[in-house]
Image 1 (tube, rainbow, N blue to C red):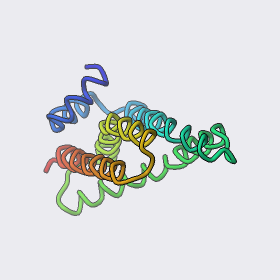
Image 2: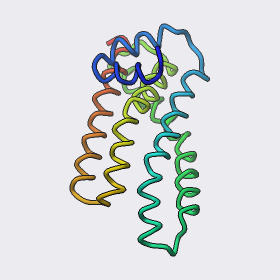
Image 3: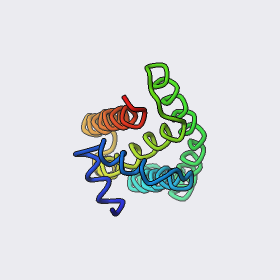
Length: 159
């Protein structure tokens, strides 16, 4: 299936999608692609807000803000690998049977699945700025990620 179709299906049936992705075979570039797509779309979701901030506070240019955001997102790559390993180890303590690859697959795919919500959050944030609406939407996005990730991690760990 196409990536967008899998993302939409993951919101309805995350277990079946992660099972299908897992059955595609082990490929580290395949899993890293999900992390890359997430980082690219996270950067895209930040751009409108950074443009707004550059207009309201011109002492830091848009290019400086975008460059800082890009470097910050790239610096998070090792953290995501660490979080995937930590999630696998916690699942292993609770009786999980998967491997580190399965932990990365679950985390990186869950991150990829929340990108539509992040893009919406970026648009809302660019129009309204920071406030209760963006805080609520950000919290809803985070909770959706937690639900998707925990469901997918349970599936790949065999629980």
